Structures are given as structure tokens and as C-alpha cells.
Length: 470
Image (cartoon, rainbow, N blue to C red; front, side, top):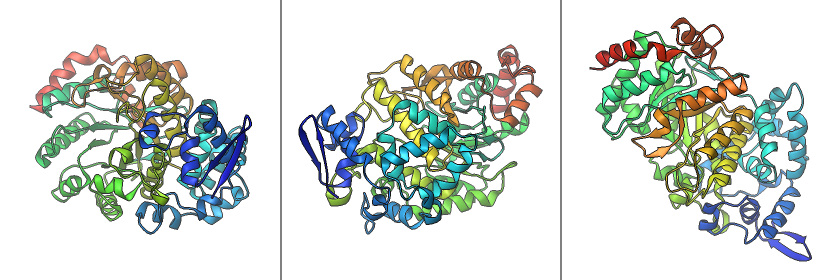
């Protein structure tokens, strides 16, 4: 495919779909590092104008990453639904944007968007996002309603769930228990209580899983837990009889990226089967939990597409969502600012990327969450996180991640605090998952109106939980 666009009397030529997608992307440091970004804002505008004229059918005929060498591409194209695609098959990328905004304004928007989702490829979603303003991404993201369930029901209208993340630098059970109780008393954890283990010991992961399951049963909490070990470790823990709720894995948008993570499609399918075989869910059996992030393929040296050209990081991120939807996950989240300023330089780039990721995931039918975060060497601050949290809540994000004091002492990055989630729920009239909300009220942690008052109960329960952990 060759596209030409004239802007201000200057003619710009784009020699492939890969090149066009890269140069149409909003500015970000990762694409500049990879060598696929526009050279200037005028070239970016020309690329976006040219991309708007590309027919959606082009993405079915011109693979961004070669079909023959990449199993993610094969999955995307082989699972594409021609029937679901038919209502939008006549559209260009620009026409698709107009169609999405028109549908988003209708009362039945969620149903219509869900029906076409199997016909949308990740590359189509990425392409249309590149010509949308932030407000467009918010409007369509909010219209896409994706509901999943395990012990809580997630993604319902008017709800905002959280992942409670009680990480500890040494996986100390007492330290984890203290952070866990702190979060529960502030109404957190209805999406998942998820721990990133400090080490890769299967026994340490088993001990953490045992603690979380003991607390869940002792207080009859409608929650699901997850220790974010490698998939192979989790499969082994399931075989050993550990109390595994969710099966976690980081994934990327190319076969090479997933190889760097030590997984492939066959292993992911094995993990899905293992998790579902346990039947531990009460209101549903979505058992998979995936994390992604713009820049992961570039950092793995697995970002090259057709003709050996670098593919922009947002298109590769959307392809990771194409992989994820094969497994009907309970949760998917992008760790949007975690990989570092080499990929998303500052708050402006992080905010834009968070909206893009949420939009693309939702459009493809995924239950999207976002880790609203940044690393300490990025040009970002907590005002940027407040802004991203607010626009994501407006866009109907399924869940966000919260950590003690907004500072993850094990991973060494800044995310949202438990209080941040309470503020945005109150400001925007959002509630936790219904099963979890009912539990908060039964425990007296929230009053009849849903207002959290759990700190009044903290000292005695902390002592009891610390005793249980010992």
C-alpha cells in the first residue's frame, strides 16, 4: 500500500501500512526510539489524513506482522468474524470514527458495539484511535460495556472496581496482611487482590495464596485473589492443590514478545483449562488475568513487522488485546506508565496512551483496567495521575490499581492510593462491584449510602488479621 497526502503544498508519501500507522500516532518517545514516528507535526497530520482514507478491509488483506511467522497474527486473522464485520465493512478508518461516535450517542450503544467487536481487528482499533481526540476516546470507551464475573461482577454501569495491590519487598506475610487490611477497610479489592511476588519461589507464591484465601474465608469476602507468578508456576501450583483463583500472565502483541515472556498460545490455553477446571468462581468463571503495556515489544526487541519495519507501540499494544480476547479474561490491564519514559516520556503521553489503551481494549470486547502510574524518572507527577484517573472514570474504565500510600515499595513506582479511588467514586457517583458493596455494608465498613467508614474498625481487625497471618 502506498499513500500520498499533500499538506501546505508539501507532498508526503507513506510506502506501507506499517509506516502510515507509525507516523499517524500521536507523539511518544517509544516510537521516536524505534524510528517509526513522524518527523514533525505536519507529517503526523498528513499521515492521519491519509490513514482516515484507508478502507477497513485493507487491514484484512495486509498483515502488519507477517502471518507466516507470527502466531498472534494468525490468531487475529483466523478468528476474525466476517458476519460481525459486515455492518462496518464498507467504511474507511475515518468513516469508522464517525460511525463509532454516532453509535456511542445511542441508548443501545453497548449492544451494538458488542455485536461488531468480533469483526474488529486490533489494527483497525489502533488505526481509528489515532485520528480521535481524547474526548472521542472517552465517549466511545464509555459506550462499550464489558461485563465479567468470578466472585464479583465487574464492568456494570455506574461501578468502578479496584485491584488492591499489597506488595511487599520480601513477601512477608505480616506486611502483606497489614496492607491488605488497610485496603479492605477503605473499600478496595473488588476487582482482585493481586500480589506481585518479590521472588520466583513457588513456595512463596503458595504461602501468599494461602494467606489471601484464609482471609477471604475467615471474613466471607466476595473477592478473587491472584499472585502474579509466571504462568508455568501457577499451573504447577494448581496441580499441587494451591488455592488459585485467577491465572495471570503478561502478554504482548507479537509472538516474539510472548517468547520473551516465556509463553505461547499453547501454554496460555493450558493455563485457561487449568484455571477453569477448579470451578472456584461463584457468580462466573472468567479466570484469566492479563497485563500489557505500550513499549513491551520494543523493549523485548520484538517490534518488527512486515518488511522488517518497526511497528508503532500502540498498534502492537492493541494486538496484545487481540490475543487476550481469545481467553475471555476476567481482567485485562495496561500498566500504562510503568515501563518508563523511554516509551511514554511525560504525563501528556501517559494520559493519551491510557485513553488509547482503554478505548482499544473495550472496542475489542475486553474488560479493561488501567494501572494509573508512572516511574520516578518520568516527567510526570500526581496531578497527571489525577487527570488520567478522572478521564478514565468518565470513560467507564472497569477497574484501576491501588497501592498503600500511592507508592509501591516493592516495584518502586507511583500509582493510585486507596483514598484516590474513594475520591473518584464519590466525585463521579460510582460504586464498587455489587457483591463487594453488599459485603462492605454488612461489615459496617460502608454505611447504608455506600460511604466508606472502615478506618473506625481498623485497629482491632488489624490485630486479628496479623495474628492469623502468623
